[in-house]
Length: 140
Image (cartoon, rainbow, N blue to C red; front, side):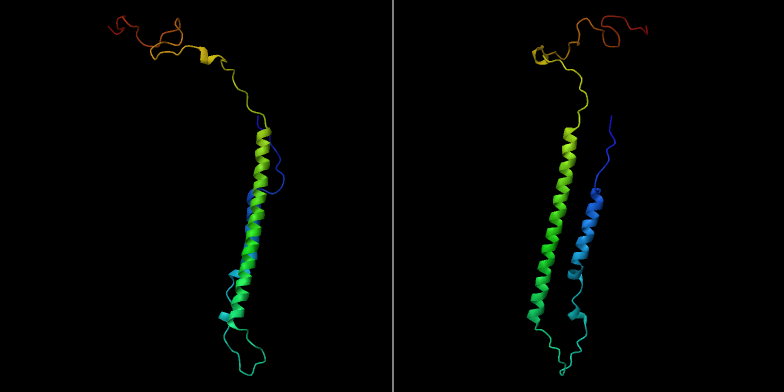
């Protein structure tokens, strides 16, 4: 008999979907195109705003990428740990459940002599179906 067990917590698919959504949202600034590359260069020579050198922009971009990768590793690590905890909980429940009943086997099976291929199971038992050896064919 199988018991209907009430599931606690979020199902695994919802947990993974939520985690994936968070990863996409966290990585969206990294996936966005570089604003400086797409913006038309309208910098006037008399403009008081100074444009940072290309090395500084590249370093900032690499630093942002590094933090994004670190965040993705942390999020995936947390999701993996949650998955392991859920699987462990399920495995523990299965291990604690009762096994189905097993039929009683002969405990001394290894002491019995081996049977030949031509011998019947029981010496005085019923013969297999078909004509008996030495009898006439019933169709004659």
